[in-house]
Image 1 (tube, rainbow, N blue to C red):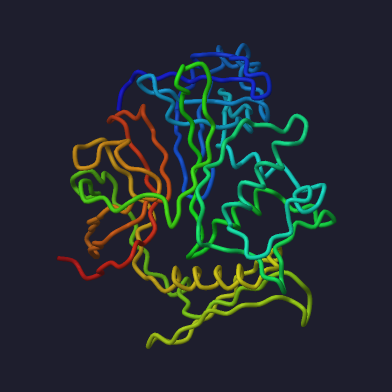
Image 2: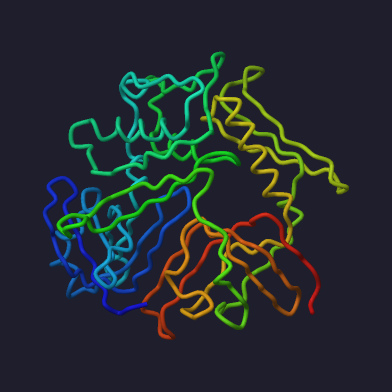
Length: 366
């Protein structure tokens, strides 16, 4: 990873550049699958006071540029003193939706939705959010279409104004399931390098691809000993998703299988979800996750030819061989996000978050 790096900030409404080289230290940043991703860093005291106007929370965009390419962009949400430094925290574009609500109902007549493509509802959420005065973040949303539908004639998918639905929660809900679209947030210079394109990428049936050219391997590019978790407390082959409503009217969907193990149950409390198809999808997804023992949830990797930093994308499947004195884990893992720390003492590092992808093998120490 190149040391040719700049941190830029910009007023989100006017487009005016506030600085092209914010002296941010302890930098850590990265994207996320079906989430905004995050950035953090610090300004030292001699720089903090003069820089406060450059990092105004809630209305300032911040970008990381590497080798003349924007590699991350988002909104500053928090700037506060911590000891002798000013700590900065930011998140990418969909974090903005979590600060917005539907005040008109049905996204101002765009809904309700019956047998609607989830990607259309996702675009409608952004169209509504950015149609209100001072609400245009300048985000473009992919025109991807999918075969994932939401809402039925008997149970349309609604945005009721009296419930003031949170747009961010609804947007994330549309991408939360086993057969739902994926999304991630990106930023890049436009063709003339005069403005930054803020984008929400939508993938169907998924983002990313299976990578056979790179891998994560203990003793090669994995530099810390990750946990391989075996927890009966977290295991369940019966998941009950509990949704909106009270008493006997409360929505509930169950996903259950018999797998030769002692029956263990888990209740997934989702009080804001009304649609039964969404509840069923969430229950099935949670059951699948809880049935897997011996998972590796993250690895810390260094820049190495086995998987150079920046060589993978959100959603990619990558083969991992992780071992310690207790056990060995081998199998395909899906990258659900990462944070890059470019200035660590031993060279650039990334903490990569992983989820199971298809199958894996689990065994004793070899």
